[in-house]
Length: 153
Image (cartoon, rainbow, N blue to C red; front, side, top):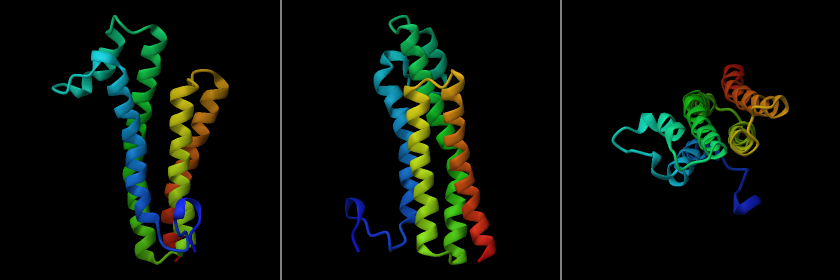
């Protein structure tokens, strides 16, 4: 039964959520590289944050924006391993497709929301920081939830 974007959510689509989550994290990184000007040096990619901070052609607001995008990307990479392991564990345990799809794609949606809040709303004011932390918490609960439903199977 096709549904949103022609996807059939009665099938197990959870494994597809792992590369989607990767691209969610990586898109924030690519955004930073493309729009941060000459700050990116492929021979020393880990110095990107420092180079952005020192870039004379960027305004202070732009510097903060690109550093937030880089931070969102890094956070996405850091949470990806737990999520991917949870998807595998839940699949191997034989968790229902509906539960797998809900938890795995819920994670991807929460990461998109996290990136949007962190990059575009700043996240330094209390309200934005709370929303960002809430989106992160949801993604972590969903990742751990995959292990929990696998354990109860």
